[in-house]
Image (tube, rainbow, N blue to C red; front, side):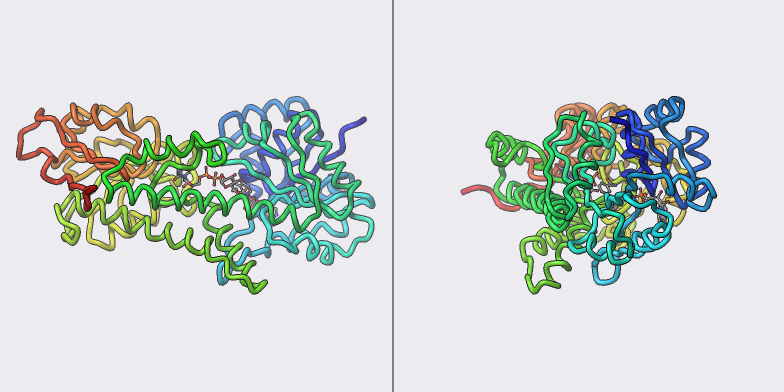
Length: 464
Ligand SMILES: NC(=O)C1=CN([C@@H]2O[C@H](COP(=O)(O)OP(=O)(O)OC[C@H]3O[C@@H](n4cnc5c(N)ncnc54)[C@H](O)[C@@H]3O)[C@@H](O)[C@H]2O)C=CC1
Ligand SMILES: O=C(O)[C@H]1O[C@H](OP(=O)(O)OP(=O)(O)OC[C@H]2O[C@@H](n3ccc(=O)[nH]c3=O)[C@H](O)[C@@H]2O)[C@H](O)[C@@H](O)[C@@H]1O
């Protein structure tokens, strides 16, 4: 069987990963994007996103002649489309008015390509879209000879290539079984379970999965809060829960709230979708509310540590923020909980200096941030009343904490990811406070006046 000619529209996290991975599986792929600068950078082997293995796949695919990148305004794009057998749509579906998924870009692309597609072609939606979108796009296409398939993507940022090539499952939904099977066959060599279904179910599977993860994370954050109040250790509680295979060990780590370009917009979109069907999805609403509350809770914790009370003023307090990206392993700042917490800290009067290993101080994306970002963690920590860990970058463990202790004003860490080893920090002279874990005082290696021990709160409620 010969490989179908594939065109992928949108070369972001999902599109470029899809294109490069399908090329690595032996398919002939053209990746197209409206951002010509991005396409030109790709042609020079430059990739804007931090995704292990992706640059290598783009380079090897291009060298093998199986991967081509093209701008959607280039003439060649039309030529590739007219010869395409399968066209993947991987463009953004951001949060729109009232929390609904904004399908504007997707619909524009469908209108744009409609007349160029050859008879018998299959259009595949990989973007995350609400139930009913396949039907709507079919109407927009106005082509009886083109099939519409929904094939949602489940990759995680920072792990995109691995997730694509080793998926837990592949979901393909369509009213046209033959077209669905044609799309499923692209993934045949991955030996992953394939869920063949109708388009509406495929569309809903994506939201149902992302929202379940969001609910799980909010639950984990709420349990961590309970641990704080009860004097329990959330790491032990999560481990004890996670051994139950029905619960699983993953997605139980508390943090400053879940963020990123998908979970926030997808929870909101599912809520709106349910609403439009007269169903009040209270569980998802509660997960969102718990998440918003989590940002505030983290700020309260920091306030308590630096001022010694729950209502202390943070005016003039200087904080070193470690981490800005929405999680470790990515340079994505979209909907980052670190930025949400930073905004609340600023509102409370704190002065901030941030450091993130994946965010350069010259990065244009941070030009409008109301606080400086430095390329040196020691610079961020200078004179700080506390160091606040907001992203779980493993390299923070390797920082020279003894040296950091000499530059801060008060050696105390608020670790919203429970990332650091409290004992090592204590030996370096730092007090440590995490989420849902007993706080740890500094060992007496620094002068008592500079020890954080007074600043570390005791649990609000001790067990009876
Ligand atoms: N980022 C992720 O981890 C995942 C995202 N998704 C979904 O996949 C979709 C795409 O997300 P990302 O890849 O993160 O977006 P992205 O923002 O990284 O990339 C989107 C790409 O589409 C291009 N684009 C925008 N308008 C265009 C147009 N009219 N014609 C051609 N190209 C255009 C942009 O220039 C950009 O390169 C969204 O629906 C998202 O919810 C699904 C699973 C994982
Ligand atoms: O639809 C999407 O775009 C993708 O959204 C998420 O992937 P991603 O956005 O890359 O991020 P996750 O790894 O899910 O993390 C989401 C947030 O939860 C937080 N998190 C995660 C795990 C955990 O234990 N604790 C925790 O606070 C992360 O720090 C991050 O802020 C899903 O995990 C993917 O399956 C999905 O394809």
